[in-house]
Length: 458
Image (cartoon, rainbow, N blue to C red):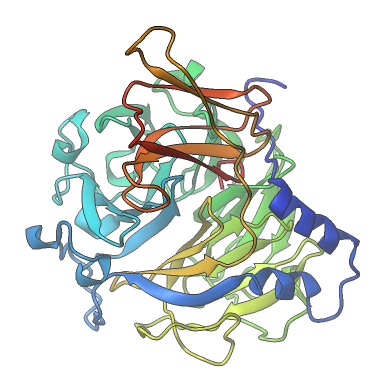
């Protein structure tokens, strides 16, 4: 595999088994795959953003210092453009118009982790003291670092696990919304307004190389299991024939001509609909299609910013409406079972993602709301941890466990068995070799647990 090829996505047995069963099952007119996928999610819940509409749509920074550490539903967000979960159960939110990155922790409390809440650029250093300018994505990977699409500063920046921010890429062509990071950080895909680019560390801070170009206004992107890149073209101009469509780009694509195949959307004015399930996605209007996230069954979710809807496209190309929304300020605190095609519940969904634990996440609305549908399906079983005695009296204890294969792993510890508080120790990608960790703090009153997740990234 070449250094510029994406790491193949391998789903764990608990999801791969379900995907295999779906692959053998015939598809009815109303998509069997989408029905099976949605059956594993709980209702769509409101988990972030203050409970009020922003009728003025001014969307200026509304962050106040007293929001720090409050429940995320008591904090005002300003047009958040992404929400992505990490292995520890945190959710990273790009709070665009407040020029900061927030983190919603496992207890639902919100914290600023990068940015000063004022736009600008003051170099690299401690992330909480570094200015951002309209960030549109914050993408975490297993080592505890995360990558920021700092759009207004024309930079992609990395924050390490110690909270130090560095500039990774300076993109003088400007940045759009799409960002995808391989789980080891060795490959990035990102978008300018009109082009898809590939970057590897060998390029230094130079821009990535163009893979495809000629788009109207790139939205977001995700990578399929076979390495193909799927890119949404939101489109600023309603009469642009490339707008409001989804394209598939091979990982070895070159920009000689703009010929990526269209897989969803009709382009042009792209009025939303139809509502009926079983319609081919490439014959369906997707007004301002923007968010995209692949599911291990082989299909993918789409969020239409101007249409206001959430969709699912199955592996055969059939589309189903998951939530009917609008292009205004719809908001309710009432959880909504999926699918919900007759209820105006969300507005302007900009971003959709699947967390490592399978939860479905949405960033919606100019007023700024984060929503989640919990994954209720079977969870993978972690291998047992063995404790090796110290090599010398009083020395560190060695923890070891069998190979996790394609499953990413997370090691945590707690002073109490089977209960919180669990503290992060270490995490890593799946491996064919046994895992190990040197734990100098283990004692009879110290408990450890291992959790495993489907392969990162999403």
